[in-house]
Image (cartoon, rainbow, N blue to C red; front, side, top):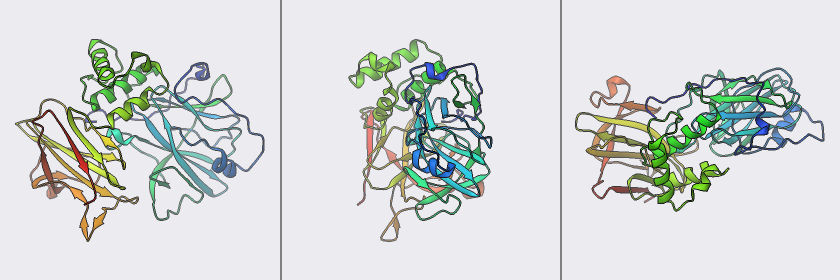
Amino acid sequence: MPGLVPGIHVLSLPKRDVDGRDKPGHDDRRKSKHRRSPLTRFLMTLPAATVSFFFSSAPAIADLKICNRMSYVVEAAIGIDDKAATATRGWFRIDPAACRVVVQGTLTADRILLNARALGVYGASPIPQSGNDMLCVAQDNFVIAAARQCRSGQTQVPFTQVTPTQSPDGNLVAYLAEDSEYDDEQARLAGIQRLLVIAGYDAAPIDGVDGPKTQSALAAFLKSRGLSSDIVGSQNFFKTMVDAVQTPSATGLTWCNDTPHKVMAAIATDDGKAVTSRGWYRIDPKTCLHPDVSGQPKQIFSFAEAVDADNRTVKLKDKPLNWGGDRQLCTRETKFETSEQTDCGARGFAPTGFGAVDMSSGGKTLRFAVP
């Protein structure tokens, strides 16, 4: 999201017992019954649906728990260095204001490392990565025993060494946080606001502060989906919201990926003064996505391209599998946003053919399919 790129920090709050709260995604503690090497136990027992960011080389004496105080639903991969061997596993999911156990039982390791990303529904991941360890991951759930030498379908991403603190219940806890430094309540509300905006409802600004505008947008969202207000407090509410955002809508622009490939998409808006292009949004196979569009643009343009597990363009009969048009606008391979559409190459961009989207009926669903 433009202007809302978070910086991730470690928040150490040793006086707070996160186990005392009933939070979405919370796992009960389980004690290890067998002593295995740290690397073996990491590969065999790490739960497979969590998120995290930050712990270190000191031997751990209890479960490791990660708490998310960001306004994004996040996925993470964890890495462990033990006696010159490095393994990785992911992806683990955690909702805003939720905690998860990501390593169970005593863990002794040389170093623990972490990488986190936002769900594709948010577009290009807004979470900056500053780690110096380049380790292998895969697009979907994975376990990689030798994570410094990538194989086909695996890519290297930066991992950061992390350092948790011990909570009163004996567990190790680390926090994901934005520059806004939300508490749990604010993070959850900001997470709801962010998804409402993506779904096309006016819940801005995304600040974690409740008010009539947020409540009106939330009520409209619930009504449009036939949902009771009781679901807002449920553990599955963020899943419900994400699923709703990823289904076709009668209003605004919706992209739907009907291919077996991952699709990366970019959008451009013309407000009458300038044309702003922005990308990339990840659309997984058989899912839909509403790109965030602010204001009342006079025209919307779209470009999308299928990529493989190594993020290389998928080709059919030597031609890229993409969906666009004749309007040449600026893009680049990494996350971007630009309102200057001339001399793309001189500014480190590439001219790309976007297609105009007919929004005259108030809503438009573009379906990407293999010819």
